[in-house]
Image (cartoon, rainbow, N blue to C red; front, side):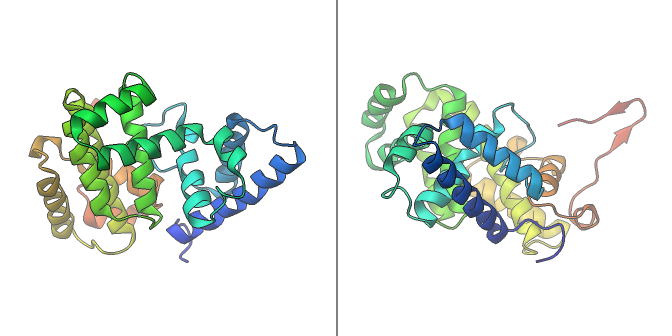
Length: 252
């Protein structure tokens, strides 16, 4: 692997190491661990390995709590640990279990029925809950446990289940496009400005996202740098450089 590049295999390897440490802590504590212990362990290991959580341009205070989705997905779908450690999953990954159930309901039930069931299970659906549901599915896709088509289908279904959440859902579409373009650049699937724009536009067309909601190149650059650790030199060849005006700098 090239120096400075964080690929999926390395992330999985690091998360497997976290799981080994978490299981050791679980046994030593007699099952007395709480969610915060897993968050702290994940944060410490990521910092040591110079890995950033899967994220957009924001750095919320609870980013590592959200990043437990990666640990959950690798532990359940990659290592098959849920059957061996059901109490650990119930205690530490309560949120992820609920979000996965929510995804299954949305994908299988008619919109109105899904809406009723989710309100009973999750209460009033705030923006953060919607985003975390999408994050879990994106994480499954990122690690190869589901297809991108399933994530796109979930986004479209969510608009029918929660039409009043159109703004937050479209903001997630924007993030998804930025993430997808950044990932394609990191894999050398996108090598120039034209290919980058074609991918942006094709994803927007598939999601029926209006042009004004497309992520700008600054957004893509941030994700590519922080999540995928693509070199600035490579990005300068593919993305439009940020323009800085005298006395005023553009921000995203």
